Image (tube, rainbow, N blue to C red):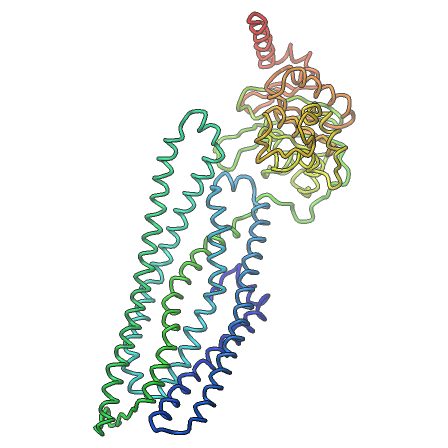
Length: 595
């Protein structure tokens, strides 16, 4: 059986299904052993010219046994395979919840292909072992033991002779088990690389086509695919060798049975005694037929034993990979006795705040001290890499921060319930992700009772209503995967609409109007000023024009606050802001000259 921290519970949860299935399987194995006895008796009757009525009776008994085997097999297939599929579904559900709870940093360090492999190949391997693995385990143990006992009672001399090759199976299984597990793990890693490469190319297909690199990527994919094929062939070769070895052992057993059994029958028919260790071996034709019937039944347990070893090795390797994923620490989580936010005014305070990403050895933000009052509209500007996005991302608790350094309405963010915190913040990221769904559902994503009217209100706010109504299906237009059917500006504005309809007390726009024209940008900023009075709005921007009409502007320089003041005062106090204003004016002059 397969045991581990994350699968042991299923033996209790689905124990009744396993119990019924195993009992049915054991019953089938037991009654199956009656058939060789009936065949041997029929041969004996025909040999002696006995009662034909007894043969008819034995025929009826055989039909009854066959019917019992048929019903029993239905029962164990339904129960054992049903349990295995339920275990797979349950584990996939747990893994999905784990995937949702893991912090963003985990996915920076782990490739998509690995995660998908765990959810598909590895889970299917574990499920297969709980189903067919259980069948093979019972048949290779219970059925084999029963058959061997029957064979020993039938003729122990023949049994000992035929069982000598079985020792080789046990030795072979012990040798190959660890090697098979290592090969399977290597195979899964190769599949991870293949999936990673394919997923990355499909995601970046536009770039590949734009640079006419299809042939180059096909050759690169061929190399990865060849590596994956070589590893799979190596694993398949080892599996075939195991199967062939088992088949050879079975052939040797049958050869021993036929050679020695035929010889003993020949001696018995000529009234010649064969004596071994003082025991006189006597075996006639009907007894040999019965023994061969037992040997025939023993074939499947031997094959099952041979298949059980690689199946267990694969399942154990896959369970190890899945367990490592489920054991990954959830570093970002709500603390014990977390404070749930019922109502948020929108006050934000940074107190000697510094932040370093987990995989980086230098601080991205250093000694930030800011007080943002509820209802203020705040712009955030600075050079690329100055920490603008990081400054707003920490409000969403994507990463842990130092206690007593960041506050929402006077509450330390590290003491808050994460769900309630994020529920009061509407966020528009730089990467405007849309689901492959209707535009209406994309805009109403943050609402539990959204309608087309609420979606239209958000679209009007974001200046995208005219675009949407121009589509053939309007708000029921499907955006495509990641919004592939929409332009960059349309995706940005739909993302803004999605955040607006949430009506959160804190709105974060992370460089969210960079892909729209100046007129649309002015419309959105004017709507923010008019419709979000009394609510806090943070706007990260790379253009000064985007934030020049907001209440205040934070100027960041190399992770530090250079200035925090009104746009008018910043023209006097902030060199970085002054430089950005001059560069923007120069750009306007150049554009005017060109036109």
